[in-house]
Length: 529
Ligand code: XMP
Image (cartoon, rainbow, N blue to C red; front, side, top):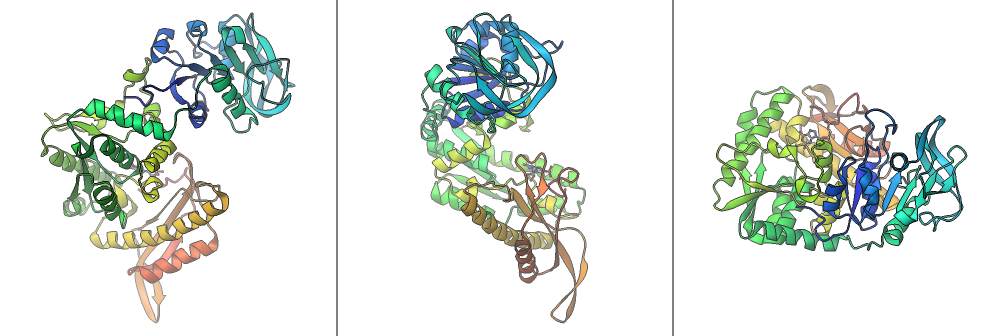
C-alpha cells in the first residue's frame, strides 16, 4: 500500500545525495506527495509510477567516474518536467550532449548567484541572491537547446534550462535553507511549471489511508503489537478508524516501562478510542526471565525473544486474524537499502523477515506509515486525535528500563529507577515546554531531545539528616540530537540540574547522590547498555 493512491507524485531520483531525503521533505512541506526512488530506475518503471514531476538529487560522484551513478536518458524524453540539482544538473548535461569539467577550485557554502536573462525557474527571485553550493565538478557546456540562466563568480553555469523540453537544473541546492529563494524556486517548479495542486494535506491523507486499509482488510481481523510508542500508536489509531473493532491491539507489559506508561496506553486506547486491547501483564514472567542476568546483550536477547513469544501466544488465541499491522516508517525502508525500482507495489522491506513468526503461523503485513517521515507520523497522530504526550514521546528502547539498570534487574531497582526517572522527566518536560514557549520550536537548539535516568550498580556514602547513608546514585542522561546517530550532552542550566538533583534525593528512597553524564556520542552511546 502506498500513501500516494490518487495523489499527484513527484519522484526524487536519488544519486546518493546528502540531501536526498530533504528534497522529498521540502516537496511534501509544499503539500505535494513525493517519493525517493533509485537513480537508475528504468524510464518505463518510472512511467508506471505516473509521476507529475521528476527531481534529480545531488550526489558525491563525478559524472565521468567509472562507477558513477547514472540515469536512463529516456526519462528526459517523457515530456514530464525534470529538475536537477548539483549532480542532477551535471548528469542532465552529460547525458544530453553537454560537457562537465573538473574545476580546479571547488565551491562550498554560500555563494552569490547572478541571473542571466529570462528564466522560468528563477522568475520570481531577485537578480542577485544567496545560494548554497557544494561541488567541485561543474557544467562547462550546456546541451543544445539549453540556455544558461545564472552564474556565480566561480561557476559559469549555475543554472540552466530548456523550457521547450521542460528540463531545468541548478548547480546549487535549492532544498537547503541557506539558499535564500530555494523554496520559491520549488514552488515555481511544482505549481507554475508543472501545474500541480497543493492537495497533499493531513486531513485528505487520513481519509485516503483509511480507505486503503478498509479495502485491503475487508472483513478480516487485524492484530497489532502496541508499545505505546509514536509509530505503533498512530497505526493503531489509523487502523481502528478504518476497521473499528476488527482491530485487536496486544500490549505486552514487561514491567520495564516508565512510570505512568501502561496507564496512558490504557487510558488512550481503551477509554478514548475504545480499541479492543489485550493488556498482557507479563511482569512476573520477565522478572523470572531476567533473574541473575547481568550481561547487557543477554538482557536484550531474552527480552526481545520473549516479547514475540508472548505476542504470538495471544495472537493465535484469536480467530480470523489475517493481518498484522506494523509501525514501519519511511526512513526504516530507505535505510534498509532494500528498495526496488518500479514504484508503488514493489517496495521490498527486508525487515519483514525479522518478525519471528512461529512455525505454521503467518499474517500478512499492513504498514500504513511506510511512506512517512517521523514528523509526518506525528502530524497524522495529532490529526487522529492522539494526545500530545503520546505523539511527542521521546524514543524509548524496546528492552525498556532493563538497559538503564546496570547489572541485574530486580523489583527494588526498577522501583527506584521508575521514580527517579519520573521526576527527571517532569523537570525536563517543564524545561522544554518553557523553551517551546520562548522559541516556538519543539526542538530548539537548547531543548533536549532525549532524557532519562540510569541506575548504576554501585553505592556510595552520604549523609542525610544526622544519618550516614550508603545508597545508590542516579545518573542523569540528557542529550541533544536529531537522529540518535550522534548526540551531545545537553547544556542544561545549573538551576534545572539542581532541582532535578534535590528532588530525586529528597523524593526517592534509596538514592543519596545524582551525577550528570557529560559524554557525547561517540564515544559513548546514548543508552548505558
Ligand atoms: P544508542 O544507545 O545506541 O541509542 O546511542 C540510539 C537510540 O536508539 C534507542 N535505542 C533503542 N531503540 N530498541 C529501540 O527501539 C532498542 O533496543 C534500542 N536501544 C537503543 C535509544 O534510546 C536512542 O534513542
